[in-house]
Length: 130
Image (cartoon, rainbow, N blue to C red; front, top):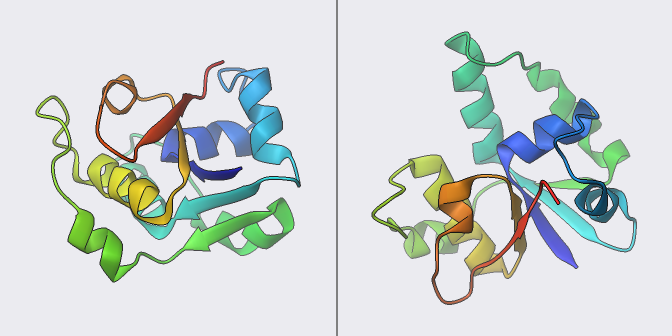
């Protein structure tokens, strides 16, 4: 399986947070899966850290390879696919990650209720809490 981690899921994973469900933690850590994170997630986490909403050290990016996670730089094709996928969720980071997930055919592992409720062709999500 090819999995795209949402920003919050990545934070839960690196902090061994129990909110990441055991089944999905196993999926994210399994070497039989390809696990990805977008550079946009790091941009979002850095912004939230600068606002005091999150503790985040961006140097964790240098450890991604050891964690078995591939960094996606952001593709032009994902930008071309970008749109507001649900009137209930206008968050630009969420919508870029949805576009990336669809564009590259990745299963989007998220706990975000608005993303999980989004219904559009090509989007496959997993609730990270299970």
